[in-house]
Length: 331
Image (cartoon, rainbow, N blue to C red):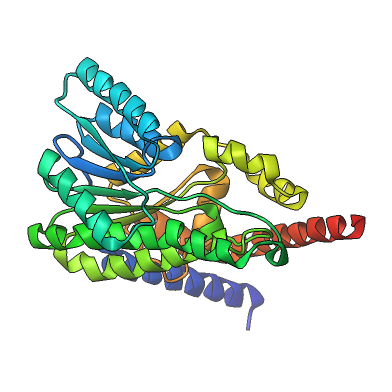
């Protein structure tokens, strides 16, 4: 048999297989529900600074009222004054309120705060689970209490707040729940045995919740910010081990406003994932696994480029392992 004929048949068969697969993927994807912001009420944990504050600013600009939750009363008051001043400039009727509370408190305490916010600004239409911070270090140098604290703040606080709002969202068959995750929730690296574990827990919770709430028209989405130039990050780098500095430095540094606008863009188009930058996009494609997807273009990229990006990622991991070994030899 002519070898060129065999190659042609193989090529045609491969193209046909992928084309058929993409058609089936397209049919299987749920319908997108673009999110509108004007006249809505958003509840944002960790909203007094960093990414949370940037999201609040972006929402106020679009006519969405916000309830901010954090611990520092002075910081909350300052940010709310800024947001209300911005709303007056925009003349869109948006309002900012704040509630000082520790999100690692009991579910009962957080439920009370949610009810108070709803009494002031109406039912919560958009929930942004943003509260959290990273504790870093080699596993044997991190106290076991840190793992408990990280799990309560980075994961369970989101579970509690979500539990407090989800019933009304299901009843009204409307709502958007957002989980601010991390690139550490896609690719675990040295020094993040505590932080990374909490972000993987959040990711698993969000993906399961997405499927559960889909029949009720309640949307779930996840954003995976890379290193972001926030107050928290600036504190982290002061004590960041050299291994982690060198590994995480490969991804660059983004401004919180950029992260917030990327999230707003994807929410307004009904997307599930928000990844930042080219490397973030590649990591999102690579780590999709069994995660939900709404964007056909993103789904097609996962089907077509998943294998190639896995090879590239293995090279990165090899480089990261070399960095860790380099610092071990210096000890």
